[in-house]
Image 1 (cartoon, chains in turn cyan, blue):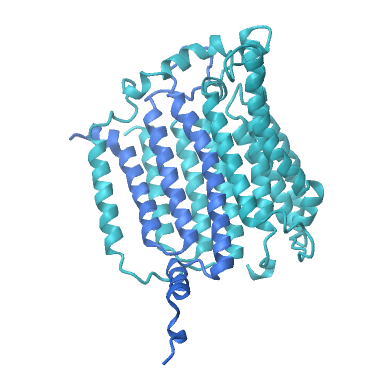
Image 2 (image 1 turned 90 degrees about the vertical axis):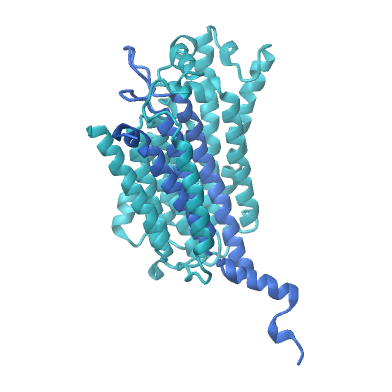
Length: 330
Length: 130
């Protein structure tokens, strides 16, 4: 057995064990931490499967932001799951039969790593062969994401925008602007305070690097937006929500949520104005490649703006809820 | 079915195991936060399924190096990258709903929420006049 398949199998087995532990445990704090571990393990597996951009996103999103959101939810709800009262036989049978049907379905699938599988012989060769001449950037994933399938990505950004609006509506971001909230901070922890202050600068800088270097290496607007938001969230966690809101007011963040989508859509309208198809960037510059570069830079910036603003305003909405559990109760 | 077949399908089978654990958590557990975690496991396993299909043996990450190389399929990467961020946005929406349910029902256990609803609709046992 080669080293490659050894790594592959080890990571998959660890993922299975983590998922099983999540199923068995009833302490929700442990469940949330394990789901963070699950995300980090799957990010490792994604690197192994050559999906570096995806691994990047999964590590930032799954192990970072969604863990914070789940912990915030636990603080507002409860930290223990009640013992199941019903019999578990029916769900087990349903799940087992579904699994068996799916396994039966895999028997006809092309084997793992097979280069002649149908999935590799449709549009993928076009993307791989033409990206260098048509778009002129090394990262094929960014080229497909922002240019070849730019319309698709606009839809995804709109979904994120809509979900963000939904969270703000549900948790009432407008009603609970920061008056009368008991100030919750962790800044009496010296180590946390110092480490946070040292970390925030490099995190923001790294986010900008990921944003604007996404054409050449792994990265882009989605990853950068999440990392950028993580810097604000860590600040709010340690120095308190009110201080974070002083630095970045909630109203400004809500404005940025819409600005990103508007920028993305606006680039499409501009290419309309030049007499081209929607989101065809070739007309934006002197040459086709220059136009593509400019267009991709702009829409990726729009993506980053919306993603980070949605993450920050979602966090503000969760953290602004009453009653906060005090630090000592954890 | 030989060893190469088993190794060649192992990724898909493990993905199915993870998927089924996620599904089982969603249908069998009553706690709403646990359900959201179960959905996340299910979702991640779908991501792994797509990315596994895009892998080519001996391939490398789809970033052009200027040398002739075998690149893994970039298309699943694009689809899944956006799906992950959409996933966290919808997870946030689900968690916001959980918080609102907690505010309205004072519990996040499915059975107890159902009991409160039944009481509202049919009247609880204490309300019935002897």
